Image (cartoon, one colour):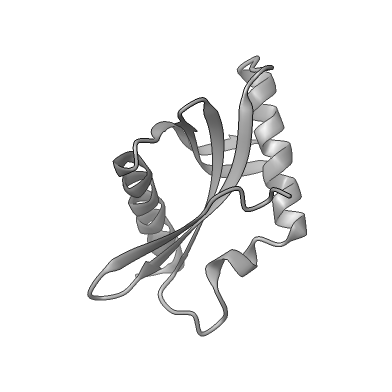
Length: 118
């Protein structure tokens, strides 16, 4: 499985995981000139922008470690594009990271809620 197929499988698994938790999936692979957001979902009254990182092993570190400050800024700017495009002005928002581990035997998710928050 190449890295694109791995990423796609991870994003599908992440969307399924979030749906099972009761999140309403609003958009997947949202693209703007500033970047892409893997999943945009609604968790109760909160709009959640989710970055999915998929790995087959942790040999090169944990998936969330790949979401550095620069990547976070791109995601935040892309989220602002989404909010402006949809004319959403008064809504609680947060940024999550969902780590997906793919092995031959299983798929495991580690959901980091409010990953960019203070």
